[in-house]
Length: 63
Image (cartoon, one colour):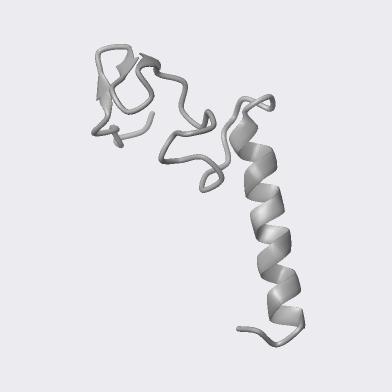
């Protein structure tokens, strides 16, 4: 169980996206920054792309 809560979540609603809370959904503050246990989470693909871009930048000497 996690101890983290989102400041945009009010009950089951996301006040940022104005729809039911779905952590990792596009527009969520966690999108592309966390890996979720739900394999269909759009955040998982975004995270993989972000990590691949960071690896490529390091290999090219940009960081």
